[in-house]
Amino acid sequence: MLNEKQLRALKPREKEFTLSDDGQRGVGRLQIRVRPGGAKDWLYVYYLNKRRRKVGIGAYPSISLADARRKAAELSGHLSDGDDPAKIVREKRAASETSYGTLGDLIQAYTADMKERGRNTADEVMERCQRYVKGPFPALWSKPAKEVTSGDIRDILAHHIKRGLTTTTNRLRSWLHTAYQYGLAIEHDPRRQSVIRWELETNPVSVVPRQADWERQGERVVSGNELSAAWHGLPQYSPAAMALRLVMTTAGQRPQSLLRLRVENIDFDQGIIEIPAAASKNGQPHVVPLNEYSRDILTYLCEKALARHSPLLFASPKNPDEHIGITSVPHLLGKWQRDGKRERWSPRDVRRTAKTVLGQLGVSKEDRDRLHGHAMHDVSSRHYDRYDYLAEKRAAMQVWAAWLNGVINQV
Image (tube, rainbow, N blue to C red; front, side, top):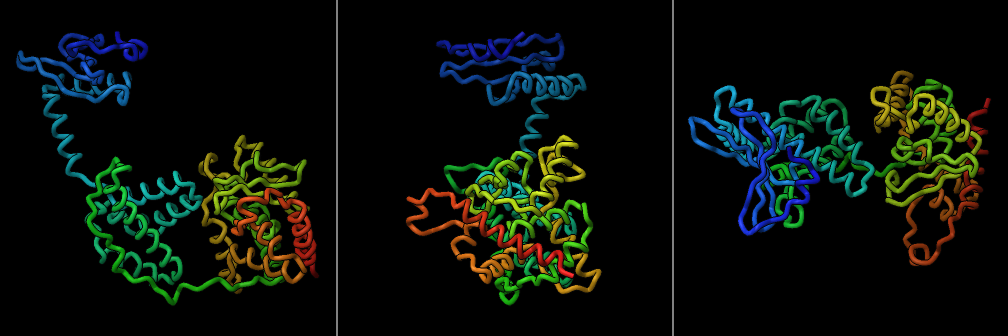
């Protein structure tokens, strides 16, 4: 019987040769073929109508011994049923050669590429596309990407416009457009090869217009009364509500970064949150000082995480290995605002509010930017300055904590 050690040690000879794995008579046999150039590939050898036949299974070590045995067992099953394994293999190959990746496959491949490039919004893009494309348009999600038309894209966006979505519709259009650009590029890039065939010739999203009047820079600054109402009015221990309170107490750190926090990212002795590069928008690690409010919240979250044996502070109730959805925080806040007929604001507006309040209270723009983890683009910061500015960030955070304390405890 063949084993992995033996396979790795096989050396080529002047002529190709084969070695057989043990097998039963009448059901075919798995063989490894070694060519003079050193290439090794798997064969399934069998007899049908008294004629010896063979089928290629794949190259070693891409196909492991265990996988080759499984494939050989599957083919021997067809042989036992009276079918020709070679014919079965040809039919499967023909089917795979004429099938193309679906729209869903394209979006999954695009978001996987985002993850490989360190884009921490990949999960959000995938979640939104599943919500806004796969959910209402399952047939379109399963349609070959090359067959999706501009009319199909228009219908997706029109559906959500009728539901009252504005900027989200533009974001969805942007994600679909970029996914198609990815598919077009990767299939023609000699340095990158997709395992899925797309056969894309054009981008069907290109001719669907973006709604320019819905693109506006955020200007909303949340009042102290609004923050206080949300602080006290949202469910006390809901994960999404706890996440929003953590956004407030950390002076508006990005929700996407906070939701990815793990127990190991919190250093209570040093009094800091260490946001890793993978969870940071600019791809750089970011240190956030704690204050009394964020320390209390994180103490509770860490205790709960350790109790459920999960490293994630915001683990999903359905899957403890994944954090709660990126959209869960704005959805909770939006529902609370709609139910109470309150004026709308989003978790991202807390960041702008903190930036504005801290400026009014005398914190310099440079220290505010550093507190929020903005990349500093001047030559000195990029190439020479290696000071961490933690003391300045601590001072700025205490200014914010004092203001927030007055807001939360106002009568």
